[in-house]
Image 1 (cartoon, rainbow, N blue to C red):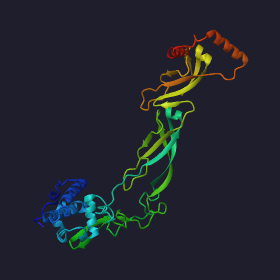
Image 2 (image 1 turned 180 degrees about the vertical axis):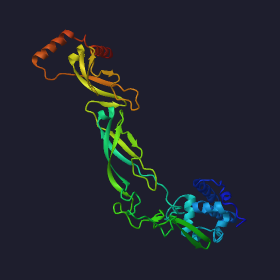
Image 3 (image 1 turned 30 degrees about the horizontal axis):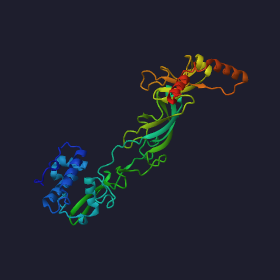
Image 4 (image 1 turned 45 degrees about the horizontal axis):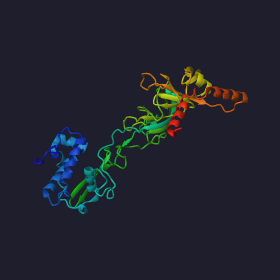
Length: 390
């Protein structure tokens, strides 16, 4: 064993390399020296064996720790010496061991795109896992979106079982070390083939990688350590929020596993349409009907706003479709710093049910006015005469 090359040197990584750096280096070298990429090349076969031997040790936290402390002597009893022989085509390999090698190199389920092997090797006990995110759709009114509000929403999520404190075991009992994997959460299988011995490390199917087995499950959560609960959460809706926007509440999702952080809660905002106003950005718009007399003579009219009614003077001669702006009466900016504007368009309503006296007055008005009071009408007919040569 004394003449063996250093495993870190074989993979080209430093002794303080992370698991991801070791894995990345292994993939790169394994692809380069794989026997199927270098058919008949004995040097490549030997190099490939050397690379796999190094990775088998450095990718396993326990074996890596032993190697860092004792070097190659830690594995002198039956290590890899019986191992990797020569390499041929796919048909010469035992499917179990070779699939693990291929999955590590190419990161997929088997050398035939998932049709050949179904299991994936798993190294080490499962670590902390972040909880799942949750989503909730909240409908609010137009005014609530404009000025903000606070809502209390019901959420159904899993929480730590109060009875067993999340252990999954009946109070007074504790999980036992898994006898199948001796608490490691993984099981090692060695397969012998004509080409040598291949090692496959897989998640323990008894404890599911936890390393412990619950022998006396909690009666409340049935051993899961989690229970489904309906909780109410207060949500502050900021002023100026718009339809389709999302509020995120950190840590209000599903709880994490094995000490992992909880997920988040995402609240999708839906704003009800307003009976009068339409929104465009932070501006709001509406239409107001006025009479012919108000448009002709000018008038003080009532204009609706988000805070109530206000009076506004429109000038005489106002035409239908004219748009007016009231500054600062729109939607507040969600990050502060003022508000948008209010725009309103006036539409002159032509009266329909006139009595004879009203009709007579209008006929008299038309007779004494002619086209002189109708600037647009006079201009149009002048253009028409010019165009038609009349």
